[in-house]
Each structure stands twice: as structure tokens, then as C-alpha cells.
Image (tube, rainbow, N blue to C red; front, side):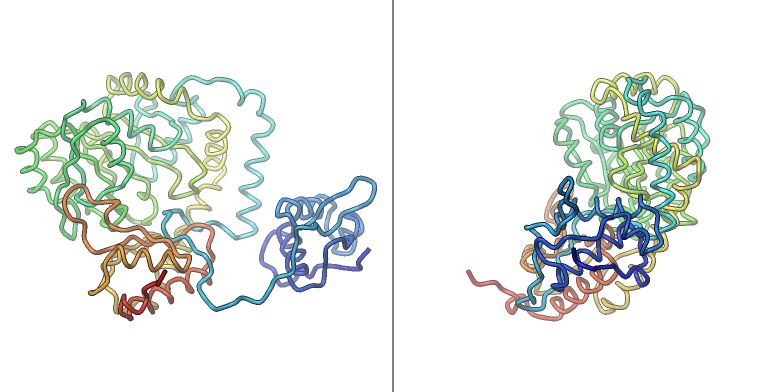
Length: 460
């Protein structure tokens, strides 16, 4: 048995994760090798002054990473697959996926412990949560939805609120209710790719409405209504994915007035609405009579939390929505919904949202420092930005160059409703990458933008 003890004093993580990290570091540095037997869990717990469960979780985490294996009656050993790290062949940015728009993942030990406690607490209800539930959520889940929607100045009664398994099923159901194949629907001229995909799947004609610095222009919206007789206007009005536009209150009211005049419902996709601490009210608060509101938790808490809250314009619309959405989804997962309800009820969701806000602001400051001379559109509250490429860079050349070095960004083609897309890309700053990795990626990006695309070409 190797007399090995991890040093946890300098690691700002939960102890069980630190133990797994230290095992990996010791293997990488050659202090632990294939076949070495680690100290028994109770022995290590006594050395570190920790409880046995924490050390056991650390060993379990290390085993999940492929670092160690347990042999019944013999002990715990360094796994055959664990290898000492070799020196890198050349310096390049560590693999960072800047293409997926995810909130920054929490690393605060106290917050992680609160999240874990919430997960463990719903275990006492596990049997009942494995049963079918009625569509739209039980009263406790709708109460939590009302608390969460209250942050957006929304106070609908419960028969207008539905709990669904994420924003996409809600959008699919609403688009399918309001439009038929061949009908025209409107959106921002650069819009969320999911809206494009849903429109294509349903055979709808998606038409983009021009934007200015305040988002969709109300006069352009009115003209599109006259020309196309649309069945709905889809908007991602706060921190628009991809361009980060946020429609101010006055513009929202003007758009709502046009919608009423032409009888066009507004479908408000509001995944980022809670990120700005003092953002404008939701369309559903300003014009509830014409607005279908979707508030998903994926972008403000975590993408794996597939829960969204839908607010319909009136009770009758709710009947139609429930029938359409139930056909496609049956119900939201009771287990996932119970976790969301627990986190909202005990304040964990607010704490997680506060973390996402703080970390996003820090990453946006980093972005401003590293890319000061670059044309980009961003917002301090968001975790993505829109990068307009300088000549002679093209979006295809830039995306290809980033990909060859392990960095993922998304070309403007994914967001354009019609016509030629601009020479621009969306860059995301969230997800599992820490600040150091984000900084390295942005520094590499800044260097690439200062060079000619020809110098970055890859020869095959």
C-alpha cells in the first residue's frame, strides 16, 4: 500500500471532488502508478479529519473518472487505464466549446452543497414521483412557477400556468396551434435556431422582421403584417440569441399595439429574461391578452433542468394548449419538476441565478479586456456575444480555423431567417469551462482576428 495522503488545503471545491482531483494529479505526476494500492477509506478519513462518507464519495468519483478500481476484499488500486501525463507537443488553447449557449456552471462549495441537499431531499418522495401526474403540474409545482414568474412581474392565476418539459415542446405546441402548414410566422431577422427548426418541421413560412439597436422595429412589424398576414410573431426579446438585443419597454409596448391592431399573437420565448437584474418587463406583463409566454430554466439555472413554465393568454387558450402539448409530451418529468420546485421554494434557485449573473459579468469583463478593438455586440448580463468579423475574414473561414484548434463557435447562417447571412459568429462564454480556459480561448481568438486568414490556413 502506498502511503499517500492528498493535500486539500488549497482546493476551493467540495472535499470529495478535491480527493478525486488529487488522485488524478498524483497519477499525472507519477506519484501514483498502475497497481498502487490506495489507503483504506476509513484510514484516509481519519488522516484528513473528514467523515467516511466524504472519502467514499471521493473514491467513487475517482472510479467514475477511470482513475481507480475497487477489488472486493483487497482494497482500492490505481486503474490500468490511468496514465501519467505526457508533456504537450505544442502550446494551443485547451479544448473549449464556445458553441453551446449554457450558463456558467457553479463551483462554489456552499452552493453545490445546497443543490445536492435539494436533490437528496426529493428522494423521500421518489416512489410517488415515479407515477404519472396530470399534465401541467401539480399545485405545488404551479405555486413554485408563480414565484419564479413573479420575478418577471407576472402574476397569472394557476389555470393559465403550465409546467412543461422544457421550452422546445412548448414552442412546438404553440406554433402548431396558431399556424398551419403554408402559413407565415414572423421572427427577428436573426433568430433562435430552434424557432427555425420548428417552423420547418411544421411546414411554416418563417419571415424575418428587420431590427435596429432596440430590436424588432414596430413599423417593420406592421409592414410585415400587411404583406404576409402572419399567424404569430415569435420573439426572444431579452438578450436575443444570437445578437444579445434586448427590446426596451417603450418598444415592447409599441410592438404589442401593432400585434393587437393586426390580431397577431406574440410568442415570447424568455429564457434569458431573469439574467438582467433590472431588465424590462415581460411582454406577458405588458400585454397579457396577446402574449404566449415561455420561461425556461435551462439558460438561467442549467441546461439539464428540462423544465419551463408557460403562461397562456386566457383560460380557453389553456385548454387548447394542454391538449396539444399533452399529445407530444404526456407530462413533465415529476422528478425533474420536483427538484425545480424544491430549489425555487428553498432559495437555491435564486442563489444559483445570482452565481450565474456574477460569473457572466466577470466573463464579459474579460471579453472586453481581451477584444477591445473588435466589433462585437454584447451585454454585461449575458453569457454570449455576437462577433462581426473584420475583412478579409469570412464566417466559414473563421469557424473552420477555430475548429482546427478545438474551439467551437457558430456561424451566422444558423440564425438567419432568409437571404445572405452576415459575416459574423456567435460566441458563448458559459458551460463547464472555467475563467482560465475562457481567457485562453479569447486570447487565441484575438490573435486570429489580428492575422490574415491566409496565415491561419490548414494544408491537407
